[in-house]
Image (tube, rainbow, N blue to C red; front, side, top):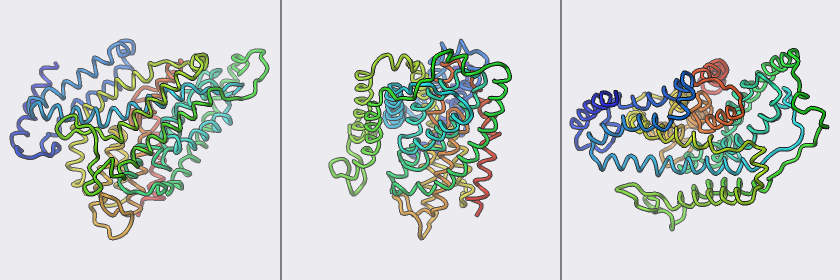
Length: 480
C-alpha cells in the first residue's frame, strides 16, 4: 500500500517538477494531490483512536512515520536530496522545534502549580474557573492558561459523571478565544506583532471576544446546570469524593513557578524584540543572524535564546518543585509525548498544504472582511494557524489600501486585520488540531478518565455551538 501511494504521488510530483523547472516557489511546483499524506495524517488521528484505541496508543509513531514517508520519499525523488533536506530542516528547526519547546516549558511549569482546598464543581464554580482561564489566556498564552486551569477544573468536577461538556467549552474559551487580546496570547498574533502590528492593537478584538465569551458562558451555564441536576437526581454529590472531611480553604502551592511562567512569556516577547537590534539582524534587509544549518536554513540567535530561556525555566521548575505537587497534579509525560509525536507528523505532511496556500493565497479573490474571516478561520482549523494567518496578512497587505495599519507586508485596513486575527485565533477551536492546547487538554482529560468526544465528535460540538456564534460575529462585525 505504501509503495502504491508513493508511486502515484511520485509520478504526479515529478511531472509538475519537470514542467516547472527553474522555478523556486515550491507551491508553484506541487500538484494539489500532494496534500494527500496530510489528509491521511488527519484521518488517522480522527479514526484510529475511535476504532482501535489500544492499537493507536502503541502505534502512533509508526503511523506518523508512515504518512511522513508517503510525502517525503516521492518529494525527495522528484526534487532531489537538497530540496528534501532543506524543507525538512526548515519545518523542523524553524517551526516545530520552537513550537514544541514552548509547549514543553509551559507544560512542565504549569504542572508544578496546584490549587489545594475544597473546590466543588457546580455550574457557578465552573463558569468562574473558565472565566479566569479566559482572562489569563491573553497574558500567559492559551497554552499557559490551559495548563494552569485544566487540572483544577478536573478536580473540582471529579464527583460528576457527565463532565466532557465542561472540557469542550474549556477548549473553546481558555485554549482559543481567550488568547486574542495580545500577541502573547496566540502565535498568529505574535507573527503580526513581528510584522509591524502594534502590540496593543489586538485589544480591538475585545468587543468580539466579549460577545463570544458571554454567549458561550451563558450556554455552558444552562447546559451544565441541566447535567448538574441530573447528577444530583441520580444520587451523586460532592460528598462522594469529599467524604466526612471538613471543607478546606483554597490555597496555591508551587506558586514560585509563576516566576518561571513569567520567564517563558518574557522569552517569547524577547524573541520578537531582539531583531530590532543590529547585533541580531540586518536593519536594512531584515535578515536575522543565526546558525547556518543548511543552504538557506538559519536558526536565529533570537530563537535560540528563547528556547534556552524556556528550557532553563522548565529545568528550574523540575528542580525546585516538590514531587508531591506533581504527584497530586497527576503529572505524567504522556500528554506532551503524544503532542510531540503527532505534531511532528502534522508539521511534515502539511508542507505541501502551506506551500500551495502561500503560492495561491492571493489568487483566491478575497476582498472583504467576511471572506478573510471565514477563509482564514476554516484553514486555521486544520493547518497551523500561525503561517495561515501570515499568508492572509500578506494577501491583505497586497490589496493596496491607502490608509490603515502600516505593516512590513503593506498597509492593511483595520477591519481586514480584525477579520484575519479573529479567524485565526477563534476558529482554532473548531478541531482538536486547530491549536496545540486543544490536544493537550483533551489528552490530560483522558488521562484523568474523562471520556472525551472523538475527533469528529468534537467537531460536532464546534458545529453546533461555535459555527452559529461565528455567524453572529460575521453579521455584527464583518458584514460590510
